[in-house]
Length: 198
Image (cartoon, rainbow, N blue to C red; front, side):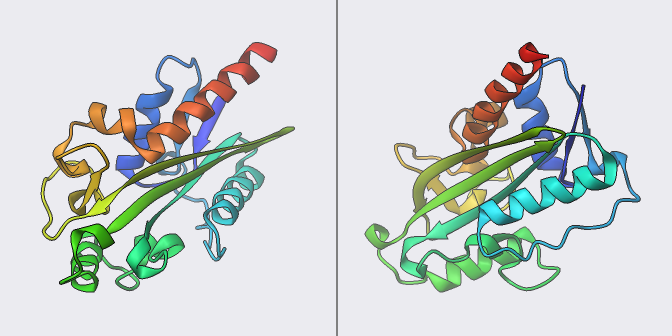
């Protein structure tokens, strides 16, 4: 059985493939299918965008599809950037652009008001298959970016109970606690149950 990851993001592909290693499934990504149209992520929730991506890619390919949508929700910013996390600093922005905007928005804000959480929603969609999982990682936004691992907002986010940013952790350590790692682990368990049922 094949599972198609509805992403071109190399970092996400590595994280998810790593979590699903040993599942016995052939894991493909959108990089293996360059002719597929882009899915417009116009939902107002992570759940909506995750389901839309999985369903549309499945309808084009017929391959059971796994899609995620992930957002960083900052308490002081009333939950922003949320569903707009990837393009918060504008269309075509880089991870660095987003991080610089985050640090600007929180400049001078005291540590106890810098609470944030990463939330990841994953949908598996296929013929007679619809499964959803979620992971949440609570932490805070620091005042200056640190670390070169990971991607996205990892350099400015320290998880609760840690002194390192996500960008200072190894991929293995990050996956063991991360929002996506949690959601993928739950989804992997569901996938293994589906496989056993077959």
